Structure formats: structure tokens, C-alpha cells
Image 1 (spheres, rainbow, N blue to C red):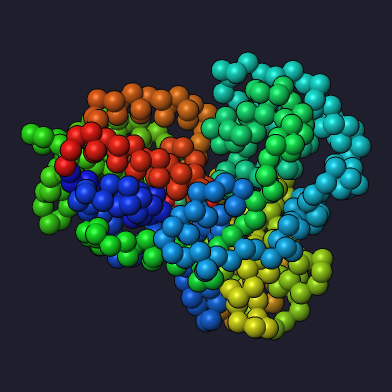
Image 2: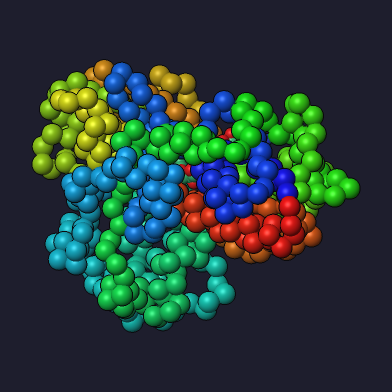
Length: 454
Ligand SMILES: Cc1cc2nc3c(=O)[nH]c(=O)nc-3n(C[C@H](O)[C@H](O)[C@H](O)COP(=O)(O)OP(=O)(O)OC[C@H]3O[C@@H](n4cnc5c(N)ncnc54)[C@H](O)[C@@H]3O)c2cc1C
């Protein structure tokens, strides 16, 4: 049994890793357009600072990434975030600490008393029909009131997807929260019920060398033929199985797993199944840019040195009209990201709020980041080190209709039992989702290959 995997981001890497373990008899070939592994998950060291180009960590309230890191022998390299990271801020009319408890919520200046009372009426709001595909804004307005949507949900959608609550489907983007309403009739009742059964809250976790360390280790998985710097052009049918064509020509496989972003799969699969390709083209992506700034020992708001600014960072709301989406105080979250006495931050820019800003040249992005820091934190010291990463199609947007589209994609795939799609475009963008989906796919294929023989 020969299996071809296209794309060596986290999804392709984890699929290859688990296939190697669960189906050791298979021949595996991984194609990657880039010269290095990891897709958006990569770490850059600049001026002694360690900057993540994409994700900066995974949460341990789900077991998937933690298990993968241990399975590939990097357990001792795990780096949990400092406790201070639980303190988060939101910039709306000014900087506010995000409430972390019901008492904080009541004391917070983010909402007026009528707005707080409206939110507290949440348990008495009736549930929407299960089939209604609401946006996050519609869901929030209905259950918690417009002010909560405008501030908290707006910041949350930006923080996770770089997207607007007007664009994201509640059921697709936040399935666990939507399920609270469906199963308990109310978010509050659902959270109280889950608290009785759930384990401890997750801790944001990375590795000492950054997440690039995980990419690099997975790319060393033995027994896999790694083909770097090769862009797959096409997947088509063969007399038996499928043929993958790259610049070096066609190669036949019994099964092919496409782990590229959906927009790349559109081109790969056009000749094989035009309808499937068109469905994939409907999945939209949000542009995002990451600007890393490193500072020598200075005391400033952008460089958290005072207790007030010691924490995870700041998310901004659309109403705040800041040019940045948020700031993560990286060396406060993961001490060691900067040399002793120095600090580094990452500033997120663009998203659905200001997509055009991502197109700026490096100098423009750095200027935007610094203008944002001045507005949000009131200070902008000169950085010693600068890092810029642009992702013109960074994060898939699970818009209204996403779940119906995935069902239609699955129906098309049923015609092609030897073809599989895996990646963050379909069933979750978080690293834990990518790893879970990859492990489950590998397990299904391992079971199937045993049945089919090798
Ligand atoms: C800025 C940013 C911040 C994030 N922050 C977090 C976070 O803090 N926590 C978290 O859990 N998640 C976060 N995420 C999401 C998470 O990192 C991603 O969902 C996940 O890494 C996606 O992995 P993937 O393999 O599915 O896709 P990708 O990383 O996009 O990998 C796809 C791979 O396919 C390759 N490819 C494409 N076309 C071809 C072709 N034709 N031939 C060969 N190869 C091809 C690409 O080069 C790429 O390597 C973040 C994402 C971004 C962009």
C-alpha cells in the first residue's frame, strides 16, 4: 500500500507521523512546496529573540497536541505559559482588564449596568432552532445582548480567527459553545454543568525552542520519503488508485491525502472532480500579518515590566478603531523567548477588519504595529529587533454555510474512496483540532489498509 500526502504543515506532518506508527507496512511519500516543514507553524530566531510566524501555543484542555509532542519524544521540551498569562486585556474605549470571574464582570467598566443586566438574563433566553445557522453576532446579540457581542465576541473572533463576528458561523467556529445552548438551553447553565464534570482549565503550552521544534521533529519521522521544495500540480485518477504529478513527473499511489490549504486543493483536484474543486473554492481565508518587536532592557507599556501589563496581552475591538488586532507579550507568556533582561512582543495586523493593511511592505507593517502600540498602550519604544510575517491567506473563515459545505464536500469525496482531505479548512483551525483529525484519519486508514492488505 502506497500513500501520498500533499502538504507538510501540522496536518500533513501529524498524519504521516501517526500513519507510520499505526500502519508501519505502508509506503509513505510526503510532498511539500516549501523547503521546510510546518506550514504556518514555524519559529524564527532574530537578534536572539524567538518569534513564532503563526501559532504561539496550544491549549492542554484537549489532549491531542500534548500527546503528539510526547509521542514524538519531545515531552521534556514542553513549555507551559507563565501563570501571568491568565491576565488579559481588551482595548475598547481604553485599556480594560478582561473579567476573569463573575465578580470581575460586575465590577468591570466595559459594560453599563443595563448591559450587564441584559447579559445576566442569558439563562432566560429561549434557544434558537437547532438548524438555524447564525453568525456569532446574531447568536451573541440574542443570548447576551448587543454590547457583549460588540466588545467580548468581537475581540474573541479577532483573537482566534482574525475574523468579524458578522462573518463567522457560530455552529462552525465555536461548536462547543453552540452545543451548550443546544444541550442545556443556556450558556450559563451549560457551563455550570460542565464545570462539575470537566477537568482543569487548559494551559497555553509550547516548546522551549518554539513550535518550529515540533515541525522539525515530525519531519524527521523515519521511514517516510520526504520530498521538499516540490509543488504538486495535479491529482488524477489512474487505472487503479490515483496519480500525483509534480515537477518531476507522475507517481502512482493507492491513496492520496491532500493536506494543503483548501485554496491549493482547488487547483490540485480540478481535473479529477470539478464540483469538489468548486466547493473547496468557496472556503474563504482571512489575511493576517505578524510583526515581532524585540527590545533591550527598557521599562515601558509595550514591554511589560509593570504588574499592570504583565499578562498575556491585549485584544482590540472594532469600535476602538485601532490599526492593530492585538498584542501578545511573548516574553511574558513564555520567558526565554528573549534573552535575559530583554523583551519581545508580537503585534497582529489585518484580519477581516483591515485586510488591506497586510499588503503593506515591511516598513509599513512595522509603522502600523508601532502606531497601534502607541494608541493601545500609550508607549512605543524603539525596537532593537524586528520580525515581519505576512499571511495573505492565513486563517480559514468558517462562515455561514460552512457545515453544509463540509457535508457537500464529504458527499463528493464518497465518490473517491482513495482520496482524503485533511487540514485546518474543514473541521477546526486550532492545532489540537488539526492533530486530532490527522490521528483519526491515520487510524481509519490503518484499519482500512489492514483490510485491503499491502
Ligand atoms: C497567524 C496565526 C496564528 C495562529 N495561532 C494559533 C494558536 O495560537 N493556537 C492554535 O492552536 N492555532 C493557531 N493557528 C492555527 C494553526 O496554526 C493552523 O490551523 C495549523 O497550523 C494549520 O496546519 P495545516 O497543516 O492544516 O495547514 P498549513 O500550515 O497551511 O500547511 C499546509 C502546507 O501545504 C503546503 N502546500 C500547499 N500547496 C501545496 C502543493 N501544491 N504542493 C505541496 N505542498 C503544498 C504548504 O506549503 C504548507 O506547508 C494560527 C494560525 C495563524 C496563521
